[in-house]
Structure formats: structure tokens, C-alpha cells
Length: 342
Image 1: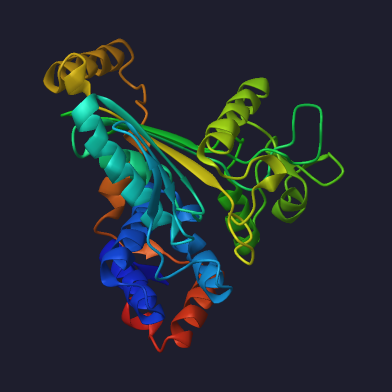
Image 2: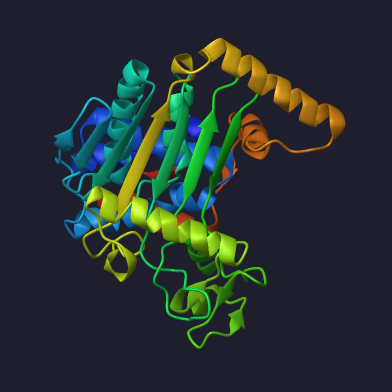
């Protein structure tokens, strides 16, 4: 089975509004879901959607929740997500950061009592759409063991940075682990192996079995470097924003429990530094230098940009197991899934 981006958005919105989510918020969740699939992060698109339905069913996602600004200054805000969809609290947090940064040049907004929000880069891109730099950090339920250990304490803790440019989509969006946990979940669903050098089983031995990897731990990327970055993000999205940290983080992989994760959204306005146009001109000059000296080089964001170009008007695959899951979700709210597929 296949589905195109337009119908995927319609499907997600239809399901969520039938569950009782208002249309504006359903559109935010749908846009984030489609964004992940278009960029090629299929583990965080429709493939992750069932997690949100389970969260709703266990009353861990508040369909009618509204974010609450707990503390605020001209440059900073701390948001209580009140367990609404992670996509909704993240979207609104970054929008607040953008408006503050336009006034002061830089802003940071933290969130807690939120939920899994899909692909991190979606929110960094919001800043770029308004000519700003976007940086997003998040922590997750433990998946990475400290160096020399086998018991997970750190999350896969993603980081996304998006840079405005007139000519190039410049963005990086990555987990600090060798693989995002969602990719292991996707491999498990599809019955596929994972690459070597990504994960350890529960006994600390290397494994290519995603089931065993999910029982064990995921390795940090770049050994000590990925571990150090995951460690720092854990602090910036845990203690700093009033969220869980270490083994106190839950709910991002298991939607049957309340989420205790945290997020940090940073917006920077180049206008307050050298000016937006000067910044973009010099950034594009740097990219031209890279492409001139190494014609076949890849600029961060090139792969996602090409994926978006190739996928936007095409029908994307839905694997058989995912189709069964989506069909079950649709049947629960009296939707015919085949009305949305190619």
C-alpha cells in the first residue's frame, strides 16, 4: 500500500479530530508527521503515529490541554505542556522563542510535561521560515549506556539546527546515539536487522537484532563524543527546564506511562548581529566555496531537501505491518483507510 503527502495529512487530521482534537492542533500534528516522512525520517512519521493513539487511550496525551507559561522574561520562557501533544507544545514554544528573538536577538524557551514530538528538525525549521536560526534539543527515555556500561541512563537526545539561506536548505537533525530509537522500532516492525556497530543486547554484547537492542542499549555516535553531547543535552533539557533526567525520563518510547521528557527551543535573529541579508550572503558564499572545492560534497540538509523534492508528489510505501496498525486505528473511528491510499 502507498499514500501521498496530501492524503497522509488528511488522514492524520481526520483521525485526530474524530478523537476530539481541535482542527488547528490536529493540523500541527499532521504537518509534523508528514514532514518526517517527506524528509525520509519514516520512523518518526506515520510509523510513529500509533504511539500517539496509545498515549490518548491511556490518558497520557491530553487532547484538550493548553500550554501554560510558568515563568517568563523578555528572552526566556518556561512552558508547562500540560501533557498535550508534544507537537503542539513544541510548535507553540518555538513560536514564542521566535517572537522574543526578533525583539532581542536571541531567545530560549523550555518545556516540560510534554510528549514525544516527532522529528526535531520540524521545529528548528519554523525559525528559518522567518529568517532566524533555529536550534532544538530534547531528551528521551534512557537508551544509551554511559561509556563502559551496559545499563541505559541517557536518552537518544536529539539536536536539530536550521540555518536560513536564500539558496540552500541548511539543516542537521540527528540523535546523539548511533541510531534513533525509532529506527530500531521500525526495523522490529518490519522484521529487519539493524546495522552492526549500533547497539548492544541486555548482556552488553553487540547485536543486529532490533528486539535484543531494545532490551539492551544503543551506542552513542562517535564513542565519547556522542556520549558527551548526549550528556550535555540531558542537563539542558532536564534540570534546566524542570523535566526528568537520566532514568527519571519516561514516556517517549512507552506511551502507556506519563511522559517526563524536556525540550529546549532556541531562536537567533541574525538581524541583531550582522543583519539577516549579510548573514545569508556570507553563509551562501561559504557553501559555494564548499561546493567549488569539493563538487560532490554534501551540505547538511541536502539529503532531506532531495527527499522532499522526490517524495512530495509521489505515493510513499506503507509496509504491510504498518498498514494493519493504521487500519486498526481507522476502524476504531469509522474511517476507511483505503479512501486515503494510492
